[in-house]
Length: 207
Image (cartoon, rainbow, N blue to C red):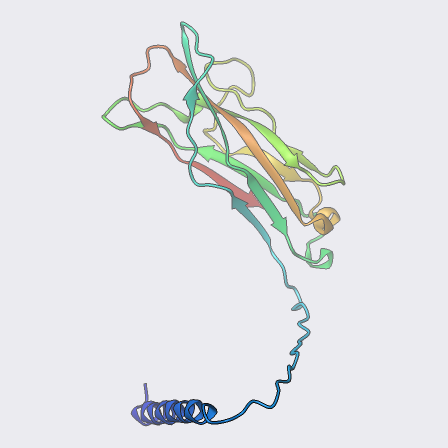
């Protein structure tokens, strides 16, 4: 910082303080002859090209608890915190034919005491669109089963899997906001080692 400028600012601050103290001292000896209010208003227009497409998640943790286990399969279930996609862009600012989508992928579950890791292929989900707007142009993804099941979707959350998507970003921009969640389920062999495990499920918004 320039020393001259700094000194000038210090001097101004000192004078200002002295003036404020002086005003306060004089006010004690004066009689109030009435007050008048002044309403201050301002109009702020939107900046050209303003707005953004964004995602928020209503929490950073979730816990799975054991439900529905059998003699051969251990099952643990829970819920994904609510995911909200917000679009504040003007339709004219959205590229023609653009569509957004939210994907999820998980790391393996690692044990707290050296237990063998549980592959993310054992974690599945059932997407649930809570608020998809009124246009019908937002949809939830397909159910993803675990490797404990069979079928084309029995792959777990190893790769990026679809939670929800919009088919035409511009056509639904006026709706502004959409929400989704998912039922989570971890399925393992009954022989899985006991202990606490953690994994990281990453959600990503693309357009």
